Image (spheres, rainbow, N blue to C red):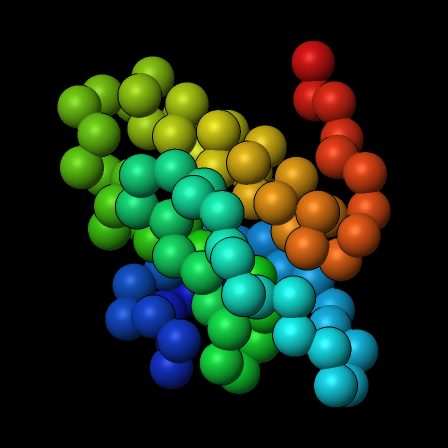
Length: 88
């Protein structure tokens, strides 16, 4: 996503739908370095590009983004009561 009101720099994100009256956000799991849970205007996780560029090289940056998506997708699935996905 481009920079917006939720974060001042571009970011990758994974989100999920929460039905009215539901709030599965009591115990949010750790997603990984630099990842942030969003629970105000929308529900999901972001990984700001400003965090990614701090990794030492392109390989480490790619791994950070890959790991973020694996962990974030499965954490979001768990929050809505769905089984995790095997990315192997």
